[in-house]
Length: 108
Image (cartoon, rainbow, N blue to C red; front, top):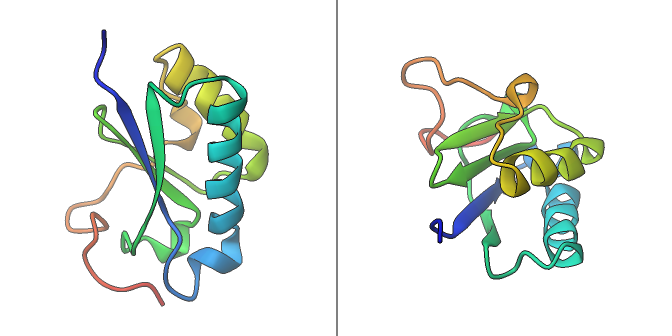
């Protein structure tokens, strides 16, 4: 059995909530529940990732994949492709420039 996946969604600061991060968190949780994946994946709210301008942002372990600038419409695709089939949704991946993100800094 593969390790349990964890999805962390940045919902803090003054920027991320205005860009739909709370709605994304709720949609991810609902989609995981709808598919009966609660034993395979957890969805957690987290503090600032330092990527305010790219919000909403989420991070998936154990693959260490960051998704940014996606919409509520992309949530089902992220769950279907990444979580169910193990295929990273490349068009939504955010690659960090050196020193950006990973909880450094504060959201504006």
